[in-house]
Image 1 (spheres, rainbow, N blue to C red):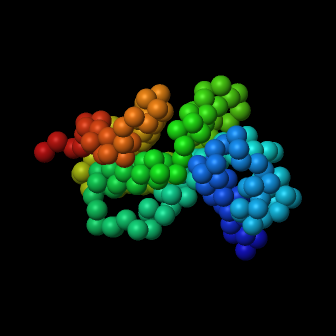
Image 2: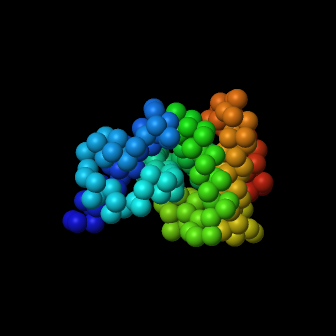
Length: 196
């Protein structure tokens, strides 16, 4: 039970922080704002985060929460390739509507220069677990190629998503991320579909 409560507390802090970052901007949001918005305490905040900058790395946590939400609502009859495209469309819709381009760019910058944990590449994240399960099932049912490892397809999918997000950031959001990705991801990933 305590583990669930601690997850809920951390979740409240992360959700509040990213909501405020989006509404007020990162620089104009204080730790006190986040504590007030999340309904938690200063002690709880500093138990999970060394400071506001540490919250940048929590974006992957927010993404994983979105994946868990998507997984609960997705049609179990949907094919593996369709599921992969649906995951992408839903996540990118959330990013477009809840995460500022500036913060996304900061996250990617921090991942490029950090000597410590690169949380976006953490294979134990929900993101990677769902991708592995979905792709493996697609290989078992004959929908996806099995002459390529599950890991290679997962890597290609994650690489395509990162490329699209990076491009969206450097183009300063001049196009609709979700719609553009909806057209491009099937093209990028079609090589992994099993040919008839």
